[in-house]
Length: 106
Length: 115
Image 1: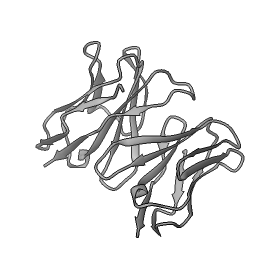
Image 2: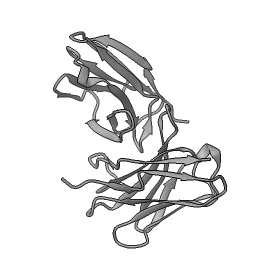
Image 3: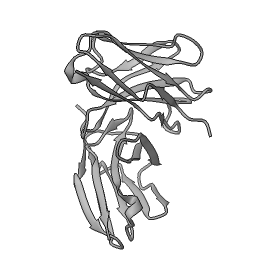
């Protein structure tokens, strides 16, 4: 059974700080996605990572993929309140991770 | 910008009743999907649909569920006899293709409450 695990499950961080969310998956996948979900809202696509070593950046978020380690990271740089949301990673055929609820406080 | 739409936004039903959740995918997309998310939990895949038939389904998608594309625009999820545990947010998604470059676009969701 394909498992996708994220940690931490909950992250409370101060504005201006940096942090990394980790996504581990249990079997090979030819792609990895990161999504953002605001409370009561739908899923917004952030990144699609397609190859080993892929790195993508958008604003204060940077995602990377290590297919050999079956690990993806989502790095947050100088967090701002607007980044408060739940972040999900998902692998091929959209098996979703457990989600990381991020809360950024002043 | 084209988007996936879903109706209703919130559906309340009695246990044992049938519900139909409706989705209008992006018009030139060929693959359609349903997911559900129980409150506070992760998003779970239910079913994918292509060329008027189910291409893949999960263990959750049992005989009480069915999907249909009744016309050229709508994609529906029917739950025949709802149970309390069917209460969840149901998301529809569509994609142009299935390869790695084909992103799935999600609708806003329908919140189903079974009483």
